[in-house]
Amino acid sequence: MKKKKNPCLLYGAALLLLWIAAALLVPELSPYTYTGINADIRNQGSSCLHLFGTDKFGRDIFVRVWYAARISLLVGVTGAGINAAFGLLYGSISGYVGGKADFLLMRIADILASIPSLLYVILITLVMGAGVESIIAGICVAGWVDMARIVRGEIIREKGKAYIRAAQMEGIRPLRILFVHLLPNVAGPILVNLTFLVPQAVFTEAFLSFLGVGIAPPSASLGVLIQEAKSQIQLYPYQMLYPMCILCLLILALRLFGRGLENVYGEKTER
Amino acid sequence: MAVYTMKRITVGMISLFVLVTVTFFLTRMMPGSPFEDGNVSASVTEAMEEEYGLRDSPVKQYRTYMTNLLKGRLGVSYKQQGVTVESIIGNAAPVTASLGAAAVITAAVAGTGLGVWRAVSKKKTVRILLSGGTLLGAGIPNFVAALLLLLVFGVTLKWFPVTGLFTPAHYVLPVLSLSFYPTAVVAEMIYNTFAEEMKKEYVVLARAKGMGFWQIAVFHVLKNAWIPVLNYLGPLSAFLLTGSFAVESIFNIPGLGREFVSSVMNRDYTLIMGLTIFMGSVVIGVNLFTDLLCAWLDPRVRNSYLEKRWGD
Image 1 (cartoon, chains in turn yellow, blue):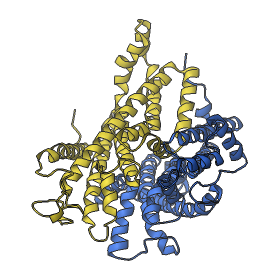
Image 2 (cartoon, rainbow over the protein chains, first blue to last red):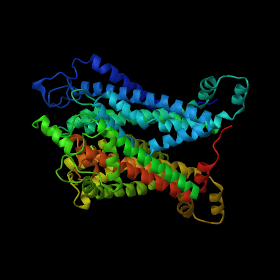
Image 3 (cartoon, each protein chain N blue to C red):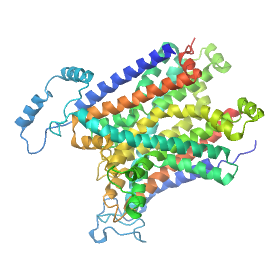
Image 4 (tube, each protein chain N blue to C red):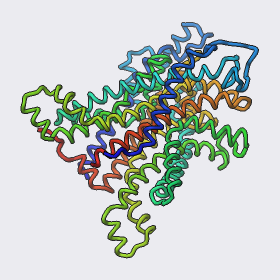
């Protein structure tokens, strides 16, 4: 088999790994901490000591950005993980059981999906108070619907095939058929959708924090950093540009990776 | 078609009901009283709550709210004295609608153009650039786009005004920042379907009849390629409404988004509820409308919806 070049997947994965490594290592290795205030070096531009400069309290932006990146990553991975797991379960049950249960489950999903989820998310963060947990809870209210629909569609397409019939006739329990036989065969589209869920969750967190209903200062997320730097946009635009770049870089890396995966599995289904 | 329409409308009505109910109870569950102000004594807060009916049982409050809602009344703002929520929405909605409409038109025109260009271009660099561009456009969050545009064209170059919405020039930056993402999505959709449709037999037939390339592309292929884009109008309306939260706050535009953000900051419960219900209803309405439109245009859609569900 000739291996096809897939630059999207390669560069996406490389960028993503680099990004994650920086988020994990920089706050550990740097001599500065994300809360360390130093009044002597307020609002300084980039230098050898402070790569991204310092903010209005003299805190090192480089460390703060990568520290904030961890929160984005945490929210992105957890939110997407929960959504994927729930969507997988929901979609499999709906698709595999079929009939009235399927109809009912999919109508519930339709109803949830027809209301803009950010509205829910904001209401939930208001009820639960600002913080990582409430954002993740909000993201998980309706974020799983797309995943559920995709899984359901794939399962319906696959479950009529001979090997599933054979397994059913052998008397293997439905759950085992689902997890051992069905799901591994529909993993492609599920993985591709997962790469869309993560940037969506990252975006939601940054957006909410930027609006002031997400993660509250002094704990920092990329949205919080952008929000804080906004007031100084005319004097020190760099304070806003750095967190923005890092945020966009993460979303881009994830999308690039997703497109690469799509290419891989797209070819497979065409064959 | 009639059966499909009925079913679709039923789902829409239930969505509306769920939206209103969930919004109502979530808002009731929010901690703190809207009248707690630091300087106000507990007895005054209590009297205020009594006055606004906040001390009744939740079920009774819910019933009152629903009855008023059916009469088109959304209540009085808790923070802006004597102003009804309807009047706030009435003032703000046209502003947001004009921004949204401009963004939809920009996205439709630019997205179609870029998508077709990417599909028909024979130059590899053009294709790579456009493909990267759509990736970038879809990857930049709307508030980042808004801040970047504000920084470059508003603060540094001073080409466009950055606060309010008075002249056409005021529209440029907010509309641009709102239309980045949808443009990328439309371009990607058009590119995918356009390339696929061009391979179909009706194109070959039209070609054999002697039609020119652009004639086929515009009158035959684009007509089909546009159906998924129509379907995207529902999610797009949701994106534009929630996107307006950030964009209107950044550019200081008195629309629904800014009202919503400030109502959240002020804990103005009736206003939060009213705006959530209004925006949710708009999105549900647009979803319903586009679904019906697509089913009317494309019989395959409604048939797939009505066909017997797979099952033993």
